[in-house]
Image 1 (cartoon, one colour):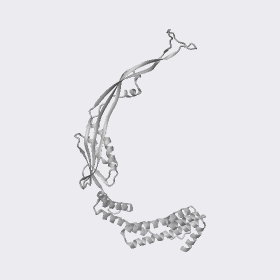
Image 2: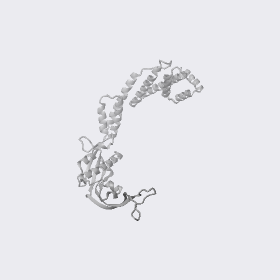
Image 3: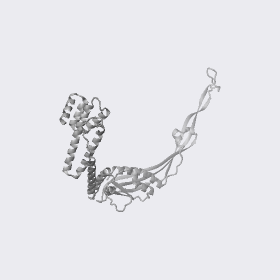
Image 4: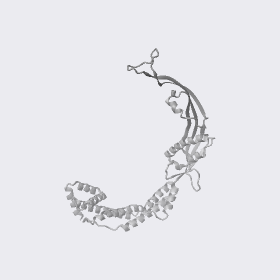
Length: 387
């Protein structure tokens, strides 16, 4: 049978058909599943068309070859008798089953020499072996009691979750591996400024859920918890909070503007109204000079917050890194008042006279306002520096 198929393929190749040459090339390269998928697609579309015979031959040849290779591979893996081989054995049986389900609907439409087998028992058995392997490997890594081994264990248990979600005691194992593989970081805020840091700001700075770090293997705690060993620490040190006095400064400006203020009759040197060629009185713009004085008032108050972020290895009791953390916030309000003719004011003057005196923020509010920038800078530091 194999000799007959090979001769048939050779005859097809001599026809010069592009699709035949392409399929022949894929067969030679061992791309059997690609040949099968292409043949199935063509035969489903037109099972009795002009090229259906050639597609059927390629389907039979590719199917026969890949099934033989898979069975030979499974036999070798079983003889090798390594637990890790259970993964490949299971997925190879799945490939055998999936491939059959792909071609099964065609067999009622075409006369193909394809023999189907029942792999259900093999799939079930190999799946159980694979699941047991994943569980045992996960346990083996978990029992080594190191952070990195626990993360390896989590990977095995996660694979098992996708394979057998209801495997006995699996969720407990996943939780244990995640807990054991997590780097717990103790975060502490230290105020060395002699000033009071508002509780709201302190609470917001220590709320690490708002920073969007999304690190599965790192947990940040602002309060120590019983039963947790902290591998690392982060110190938020505030060394300076300087608040300036409330300052008010004034500057006065004189404005002078020549403007049009209505109209008047044009008079000659004798005081008579001048007329145009049609006898009409001539009118001209009335130009006047107006003045005003403008007083600009500027309110300012500033706060300077300075400190640093210190990363520490608590196991070795040493500093890993240090990053400056500081900002300055300035409250500023400018408004203007005028006396005189409003028409003398500039466009800028007209904007500032809309403003008015604004009460100075309290020292606490100033620190809170500076804290918004502090939080942004801290977020950048945390995102760019992982343990």
